[in-house]
Amino acid sequence: MGLPVMTDSLMERHPLKSAKKFWLSYWVPVSLLAISVAYLTTVTLMHTFSTSPIDEWVYIDYLVKIPSQWIVRKGEIVDPFVLNLLACHGTSPFGPIGTLCGEVPVLSDFPNTGISTADPYTPLYFYSAFGVGELVHFITGLPELTGWRLSGVVWFSGSIFFFWLLLRKWAVSNLTIFVFGLLLLSSPFVWWTYTYVSTDSSSLFFGALLLFVATKYIRNEIAGYWFVIFAVVASLFKIINLISVGVAAAYLLADTIWVFTQRRHGDSAFSPNKTTKTLVYQGLIGPIALALGAGAQWAWLRINSLMAASTLSADQGASHPFGIEELFIQLTSFLPRSIASGAVDEYIPGFVYAPLSWLTIVSVLAAVLVTLKYQNHFPLVVAVAASALLAAPLLAVMLTLVTHSYFQLPARYGAGLIPGMLLLGGLVIKAKWPLWVFMAYAISLLGLGVWFSHYLAFLAP
Image 1 (cartoon, rainbow, N blue to C red):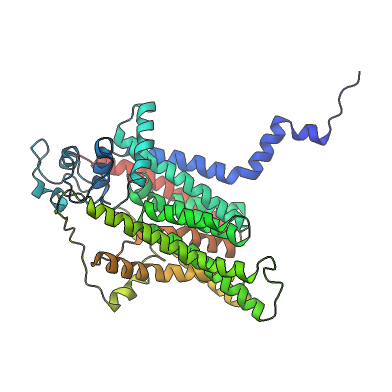
Image 2: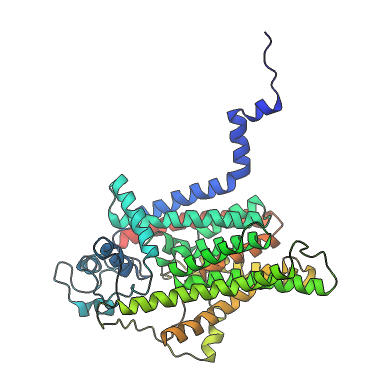
């Protein structure tokens, strides 16, 4: 009996051949996920019980109360456990806050006189953080606070996965996606958001997911109702996610107008598979999703108000006069600063992270210039560029109308725009040498992030 002939099909089924084929196809997401998990887990485990200055103490209070009451209601006093956490460990790197450690907490000694400010949030994010945290605590025995913080690793892993899907859908090269993923991971926004308990954890996830779904819908690869469903869910996780809904909705509308314009100019072959009715529906589905998302948040705020525990309210001292001047200031709030936004700037000079801001600016401006000359990716570029400039002023107006107060919006609120801005960069960067420079820079920032964690732990009480 002769030996079997090694046909191509048999060779393809060989484990080593299959593994090599898998690696060549998926090395980018596998590498980014592995590096992200290793880096964020390391940083998180290095944290002490000192809380993040970005309101982590009220988020921890919400998580502490989930087993007994499921939600935090308006006018609630923060749990004594959290007040003692502030008194003994404080916020990083500022130290203890409030009553002296070991003494009975006096509410007037604490920020907001001890009143929670987490009640406007729906419980969705907190349930996700609590579920992951309890699972980590059960499996590893780590403190619950550490487990809750490690939920950020899960959120960022999902974010980087959809970021890869989004850029791959637009035929961005593997090397570019990998380098941009490393730059995103190494940013101050990610350091502060995904290694502490933070309601901003869903911003990147939904920013990438909604643009990805919108792209698939425009290319007739998915039904439009999926976009509406994801938009409403995103809005319920945090009202700021309406920015992510807005940029994707703007893309749908811009593409509709673009196709109609091309057809009017005689290009009947433009999107031939779409009827006029289909295009009208595509243009309307974005505003509909945006309206439903905003409506869902409005309904939650009404329910939250009806369930109030007391008439107490926290004065955060953040109110600011609102006018035309503020609108112009907000024009530059998200585009240059979102990716480089953090909580503490005094230990690391601003110029260290400045190239991240420059990257987003150059990505958007270069994409606009290329589009003006060659009309490549016109609807996407218009939607992302317009959103990067107008999202902050529009959000400021909306919050003022809904809450009857105004505060200067933090740059981190624009995080949902980051996937779109980096996508534009991926579409215009063709040379490889800038990518190698950016890779070296990203690796340096990752090392700096680990050092910074160690340094803050050293400063902690």
